[in-house]
Image (cartoon, rainbow, N blue to C red; front, top):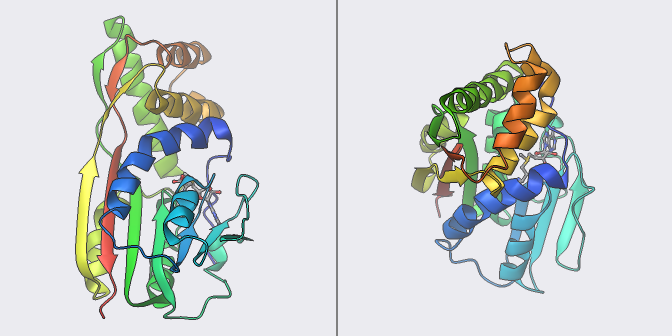
Length: 261
Ligand SMILES: C[S@@+](CC[C@H](N)C(=O)[O-])C[C@H]1O[C@@H](n2cnc3c(N)ncnc32)[C@H](O)[C@@H]1O
């Protein structure tokens, strides 16, 4: 059993901006896969369910989307969507026949769990021959501040973003995992493996900066141990809603792969 505890609390203030930032990328990835009505798919660590709902639209009333998360408060079961509350640190313990799933999706989940390699293997086991895997993770990159009201503000934003990333890494999040996924899938003899990495410009008041602000709020006490003060974090919160601020957002790597036929 894995011991790493997830370092955020699920709340709309975190998951809404995360979804608004990442959903366009995930939709673009899913559009590469010929998803058919009637498919059975699994969303691992489904969060507030935006991808679950997109998948439900694609598989239609004859399909099934299984959404699993330790915190299912923000997930709504429907005639198509089955919701399971599970702690993934105990593995993917679900009533699914091995070799039966058409597609498995997981976004910003495995990086947080230290049994990620086992979980990846279990996802592959559940896929049918020819089934698809779509994974996405935030990966470490150097912060880049394009504009802020003052040089001090620019320096502060840089320090806080790096303190967030360092705090997560210290707490067990592997911010390199998204870079390693491709090689793990090659080792697992998956085919059609394709990965791409993206980091968009985020503007104060937009979803990316609101995500940064919420990450800093949630990690507040631990950031104080990273040489930041309360005043710094209050100023960071103000900057994240200031439209004069422009930064390069978190880097995100998507990987798509197919199980051999
Ligand atoms: C960053 S959120 C991503 C949510 C969603 N996949 C998305 O991208 O919108 C990480 C999700 O992983 C879930 N999670 C974290 N640790 C977990 C665990 N041990 N078991 C099950 N789910 C977990 C959280 O509850 C949260 O919903």
